[in-house]
Image (cartoon, rainbow, N blue to C red; front, side, top):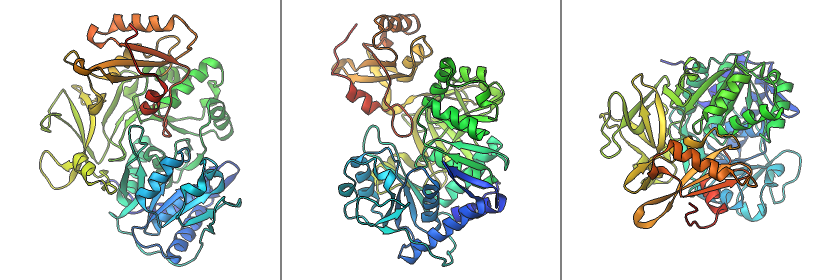
Length: 519
């Protein structure tokens, strides 16, 4: 059994014991020790209780990257409420949707974060706003409460944090994580990564993203230090690496690609990564070319390829010793988790080498969707092997090899049908990944009526390069059967990303005109 705290307040207290006077969290020029961080979390939590927060009340946290942001997320949960971290890059309509959906007791906001909104007064109309930071807010607000009242014990399985999916293909859904989910996830992930008290985690991912939040919680579990910053580009990354000499860096594929390009451009050097012990990837498949570039420049760094989904927090990891031989795999189930591969049509478990839908079972399954009973019934279902605990049907089609390693194939709802063939968009993308002059790749289907789908392939590159489209087509003809050839190839200077760094298919579609085949 993995030793873990039972709730987030206990986890913060654990961090204070392990790192009482050393710097725990730094954001820009501000830094706090573990003991100071605990004092601020407890005071803010008690203050929320003093102004009437009840168990289960939601507290939206719309605060710029700062110590205050981390304090108020953990304070809301520690007070018995449910913290709702709101990503700072979301626009008015997206923020308004989250607030309307979660119905917060209060919105904790900073003036700097509200600058991201076009009409903050209208977006936060009718909300109780608690101000943090020194600058006045552009709307009526009250100072954030502070108090010294004792905090009550928290129920292990009670809701702690409501995380909203990025919503690139529709309105964002809230996913409810319990105290146990988050505290146990911190213990499991920090354990297999080998995090220790002498580690320094460079946290560039948002705390509204389960992957980013786990960096903060994992550091609390082991007493490590955290340097948190908004990621603005490879130049800023180089500055942070040189200034703080972190040992741990987590990223999504877009960050890995930036790093790979940074080596070529000279913005990053071998020396910049000398303090790093480990790098992790999740959120989507890591391009082998980008992983190889990092391994070549920083061969001492352990690469952990991981898989997770917000509905189940964290699922799988590939041990670093296996990465070079299996760079496209995301490994096997992490401790405390079971991963099943099931027949997509029947839900029956498949044994041995198999391709099917990935199902997540075990301790890290979330409590469910916030006020989405139909979506919950579709995704959170009874265990197909029997038993009472619900499991999560991921919607991801994966392949399991003879040694139990898992490989992503496609989203079940993104599989394309062309001339009667079922096609993975990611298999088409893989055919051109790593080409000279080609950066990120995205593939999706456009409705072609009775013929099924028309394959649309978009690459990041130089739109002025007249030969790149034909080079891409030649590569596809050499590597893919006729029914997998793209009908449309488009070259863009850069592909759009959602706030969590994943390619935003909805935004990409909106950038491009209606298609006709350009073969």
